[in-house]
Length: 145
Image (cartoon, rainbow, N blue to C red):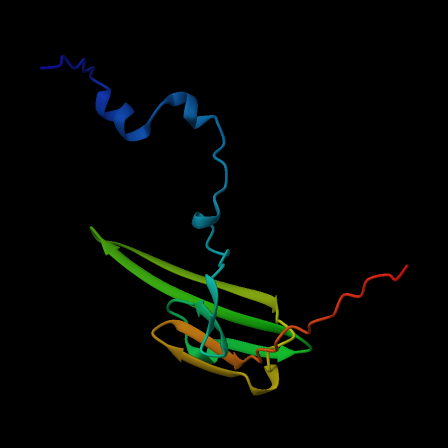
């Protein structure tokens, strides 16, 4: 059994932490920033198709824009969130809006003019066919003496 020293203010210090931390500014973290939104993008080659899978969460398809031109795919999106909390007779309302824009280079073998996009369960998937060209073999010649 451990002996725990308790003071009259132990609950205060437990809730509000070390007084030294009150005067030390906290480093900003990206996860707590409501304006930063960086959806995860996965690129996969499957059955002769190049697939971009973008996890956009609770975004509506009309808030997304996909464009492809000159070997670059650009995905833009906006999301708006509203949240209301009612506790002990007090109410809070939070409204936040954030956006993202990502541009990725396409390989030369991608047929971007026939790209297709689909949206399901918070996942945007852009796919296009790719041509599997065999590498050109170059014959090595030796210098003759």
